[in-house]
Length: 227
Image (cartoon, rainbow, N blue to C red; front, side):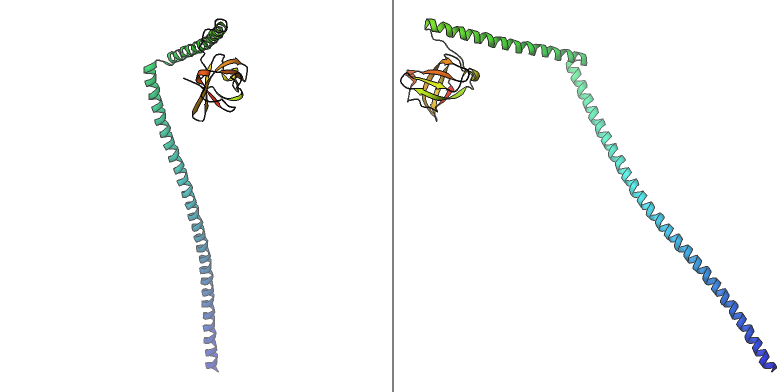
């Protein structure tokens, strides 16, 4: 009986010891799990910090590229400004100060205006002289030379073969003048020569000069200014 009691007490003691060891093991496991969770959280935080640092690095590189581009543009603008400044300095050395240049430009404008006015007045005078020459030729029968615009070009719109005159589709608006002379051509062939007799705004009448008549002039023949 005493032996059984002793064995029971020993078994109880071993059981209590095992329970204590199990409790310690459970505590250690819980602690390990907590530490693992903490470590995982720290790892996730570290990874997020790493990604944030990467994004900041990309942004920093972009800003650096923008600053570099701005610096290059500034340098190019500065070089261009220096070149322009040097060109302007050389221009001033050759033409004077800004006020002197303005004075020269104003003088040039005045001369140009005077020239334009002179040419206009000269054209009016030449036109009056031409008209007076034509009027004089009507009374004296003297030949008169009338200059026509080199660009004057038209066509024959009607022909009177009996009285040797034609109607042209060019008039005063196109530069036709009384006593002006025109050549008549068909293709590359010279057909005859005309002398303008009467001029209206958009058409005129011309005589066929007999000494120049190569063929019968027809409607649609081209008329141009001769040499």
